[in-house]
Image 1 (cartoon, rainbow, N blue to C red):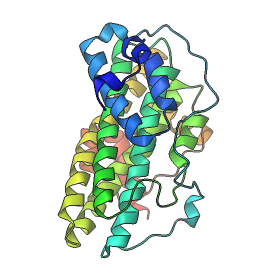
Image 2 (image 1 turned 30 degrees about the vertical axis):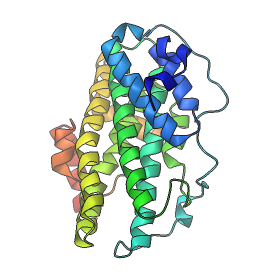
Image 3 (image 1 turned 135 degrees about the vertical axis):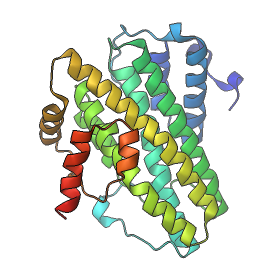
Image 4 (image 1 turned 90 degrees about the vertical axis):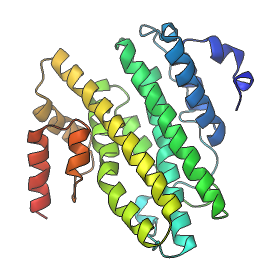
Length: 280
């Protein structure tokens, strides 16, 4: 998508208004392209960010295509990675996660007013990188003869966005630090299985995703602690309270302690995870 394809109103609009417009976009490849362009243009012209504007929530969030069919997670069958069909299903599941991650990052940009400028620029960067991941996975999926939408998927990521829509502290606690952090744990074993199956092209995409996701979780940790500090809250007890209040998924090992440390989790949090790992 070229600059000339961006709506004029979006190219000149407040970056947070533009993020909402892109969140409403239904066509995945167009959404991804617009998200990347918005970050690049805002990085050059950060004055486009207006933290003080409060935007009304439209009724069509998030914008997404008619397919994939959204089903309960329990109805999704796992397939082995030794076959092309099994790897196509996996790539589709990963693409669905990254498509939702674009939406989640854009949602943080438009939804929460009165945050520092860097908050919005951070989440625009996340949206752009998630868009890049989606594009990589979509291209690889096409090499297997499939497209995004060909297989059913679940809506767990956006459901957490819905639950935390009124609380930026809960959003920072439970999306990047919980849901995205689970990806840090899941990526290495998936990558290993892809490599063992001889699919080094797909494994290389997992390397890109893991590298970037460490940065995304680090951003979540940064803003979670910023908000805790501002409200004089202990981050450890606050996280436990929010996880219970918003019914966050239970954390289960094995955990990628090295990646989690790089992503900003402190030693007390890592010791608590090690206790969960040992208790299996």
